[in-house]
Length: 367
Image (cartoon, rainbow, N blue to C red; front, side, top):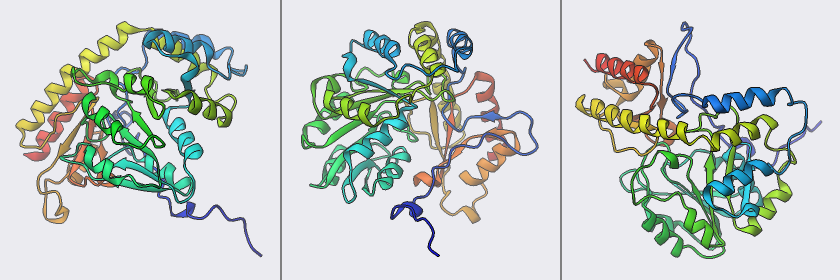
């Protein structure tokens, strides 16, 4: 007797593996594996969440109207071009479902967000990895990866897990070389952390073009990863399509209330930015002083590369062994072998106390 079968190819997809959350034998751990905000949600956001919980038996506004209005006002965006999602990854999934078919191609950078190729494969599309230049997105390589079968191009800016970014001028150059029937999706999850003047999250490109999308999230600087809330700015036609196919109540009542409070709390965002800028610089300097390779990062995390990690068995100071030592100290960071960086760890910027613990633990490991 035959059994139900999934669509072809789905069994070949390697599931996304998130960062660990606990360590056996530890009641409390320092979790720096998932680029979560150092302070969690703001007090104003927590107050809004607590207030909304009592009404969570009610279905939410299916259009996230009030939240979209607040985003529209804050960034001077057209309301009808805004779509909210259960995390920005829901919007990535919807874009792949609605604009790619079996045999089509979806381009992403070599060390981009792991969900880009996964969502591509779920619709039978072929993910195409564009090589990077010094772990930074390379415009010529992305353009060379585009063929007549390409439907979507994803670029995370800044990129996770490398922490690098493309200046606005290079994004513009990339867009100018992309065919008009190909969607360019700029995933700006870490935009709030970037202080460089030549950076743009993609506002102008998205405002002025019919094939550019900007995605944003509440999971990082707003400290709402567990709430699941993101948004995007789309061409009107794309927004219309997404609203036709998304689930009718895709953003919960609590998430909408939390997002509305968070987007208006500029004081909290500024404080978080200052904290991250100070500790990011401090952490990078400390790690470099230990002889580790630490590229400049423009997110809320650092990429730490351990020299000679390729020969793990003969190297007592490899990324794998450093990760094990950190775990023995109750510290969880992210190994990046799955991202093609077996010699690297990614460390989220946490509180000052947490970062001092990380430096002390790595110093102990190297000595």
